Image 1 (cartoon, rainbow, N blue to C red):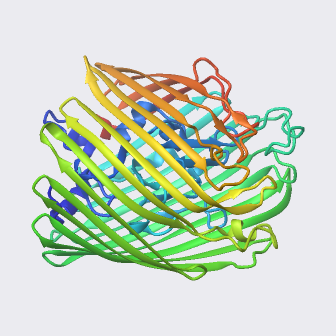
Image 2 (image 1 turned 120 degrees about the vertical axis):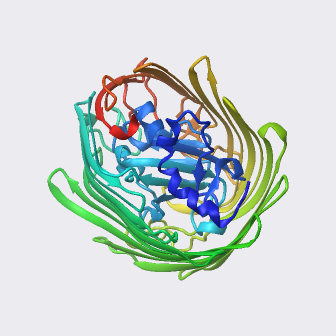
Image 3 (image 1 turned 45 degrees about the vertical axis):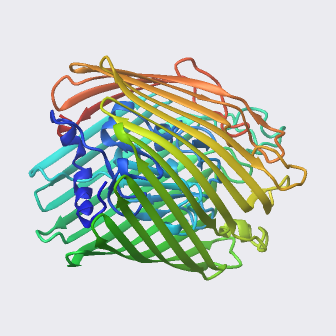
Length: 616
């Protein structure tokens, strides 16, 4: 439970965890950086966290990031159709704009809509995902009301030599995807270069009758809505003997998506994330990190072949973080973040840019069996003025790996440019920033062979932004979200079992006509079970996911029925480096909707050939 600057060195070991897992020694607890912006082990985290590794991705065989995350504690997705269609994440019942997405430390998301395009992130380029649930505005500023998700792209190893990787997948709806990468490194350097592509003819996004029902499609086009994606990524860095490190990452996605719309039905998209960092120790007890990054999003919209319009957004960002060891097992973090947002569109906005500067401080201390985390932050937004947020957490470690934790935190979210001004002259320029207060109590245990955790929380949000019956954004005076999350992991007779359960009560408490209604597109209950086992070179597994009811609108007139899906998978390492993977998704061909009147894929089959020397 030590929190010294030596923990920062563990971060370099995180990406080499696959090699460590192959040894006979007992596995070490994963190291995460997202929860505190410093390197700590999962055992030391005082927040509810989930870590997904590259080995987990290859075992579960997802075709998208949402496919991978669906059913994890507190995670609900709403998707307007099949693969590649707009995907919104609701973490712990908060709005889809209330989850901060980072890619290699760079803040990602459309400046106009405030949404992170999870559907555009290629899962084959992902090395690791860290999910931190609960408010994190005291460390990251705006948007982190529900939590923070950080995606790390694939990174070269320190084993030396050049290591290629290759995969190709074919599947239902004429899906074809491929990825090729080259990576390597030595004790000081690492690098990874990768290129990938995906194509599918898709499914019909809207079911027939959408126009008559005034659903979100507003038109009926009984055709298949295809999706294409081309992506490139690069990741490189160098670490000197004195601990200084210089690194950089770059990810670019080019997409084309067809959908059903009344005045546009096709978009060409560009999403780009770039970042670099330099860290070093001016003094033995002081580590400083300088980082810069940029996120670009562009959507060119068409009706058939005719150009309709575009939206372009850019976010530049920079930060300076200082980690100071003030005493044994006590770490003080001080930092400054800056970001500048800019938007351009053919329709025009009444305002097109703004910036935010935030300064923060965090203290982490361990005193015997007790852990303490305290953090505070002040943000100045050029549009909405100053906002103060804070958080406090305490944990106590009992015998036998049992840990009790309690936390409280505040957060805020500024209205997006779309909320305020889109389309031109519309929107609601009188919107106020959303503010939240959250309290949480957790109990967990880590033992050899099995682990479990239960977290109960309540979040109150004031000035929550929601669309009214006329799709006009307005502030709801109050909303209250209560939830309980459970996790269980075990190894039984060679079978790897992982289970997740979420009970959620997201309620509107504005005192008006919708008082007591369920907030839109949240599921009140979800459960997921993953079961896997290896038999020598062969692996088999299954995932069962179930979701309770939800509603698509604030008045709860449009019900989203509960549903369940079952996925089966198998793999065969026919040589140490080559593997064949097969997956059958939605085995029982259940029909369901996560957005009212939008279809989801039925039974689907996928077959993958993978070459990956690093996974021996």
